[in-house]
Image 1: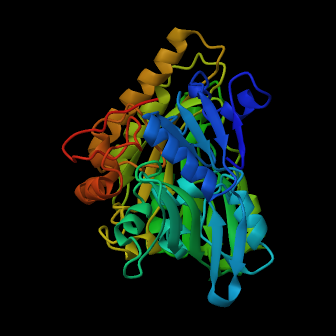
Image 2: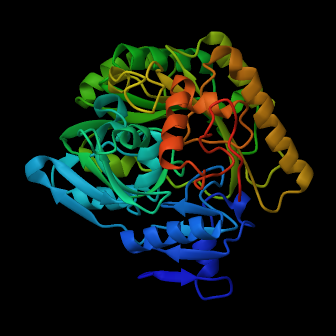
Length: 460
């Protein structure tokens, strides 16, 4: 290797091994390969294949379900974070270890952008391979929709270039746009098409704890009426972390509008008429200042979540059910985050056919995410109550949502996960798996199965 191989007990091992979700902090790799170039990635894949060793590939390490860690060899591409601009052709080449923040820093002065996520340390690889949601998705599409080519090391140790050009591994390219990370190859770079950006309007609006269902309905109507102009992230969450009472559950919407502030206020008038906000931040900003405003703290600690896609809108009965389960939150944890969130995923995302890329959820308008977290100091019974509440809450919401989930919001406890993540695209994904990884060396508990009728055998 040209990079460093870190073994247990050596300086830097514990820091390099630490996952984003501390639920998986007790999964210690046998070694961590800090890859600095394509050669290193190929060497790792060749060794793992020849020695029949388990491995995982990690970019940002944000896989919520812990699939980017392993008890085998951890192939870490984070040192591969170079970004090369080609403004003449409207392209940018991004190495697999670059983060959302790295991309923002490289593009900020250019007036050009790639639609990407809001968590700064999320890796480009995981983002694009699972689809790639962000506040520009309704306007410009998912991150995977901007992908023009990728380089990847497949199971046989070959570095391949995949694109939609004839003869350039077209099936692998199709799978790379929403088929999920860690399934077919270890990606080393991505080439994206850039789009021009200008001024936008950001908003962060919080209402008092009343008329929650009506407010969430109104916000969805606003989004649906202006699908390419608005991008909302609307949620119900406790005003105080220790409470699950209805009179403490507030509605908040955060997002971006591709237009001036005055016009946004007009669009939001139906929601403002229901209740006067206690916070109403509406600011006209340039695109990159807006991105800085909308950036979020990366999720940390111990947590679990579920996601479902919503076609059209989550209606009154579904929102009533959400409120009822928010009120049933068991509490008792020293870390008290629980919420229900609707991410807008319509607009330009829906302009692409479900079979055109591996990301199949093109008929949906929202992603519903529900979440629970807990503290490492919580007793086992407290943790069990948090997890049971989440599972029951998710089950109660199923009559009101589609039987589909976002692969970038994974859960190990998701029933029928193959069809939830991939739907009608699962058979083709399995065919791509058989083509590029016939011995199933890229495997984890929810990896694409070789046979679409079965789940792949997982490993840590």
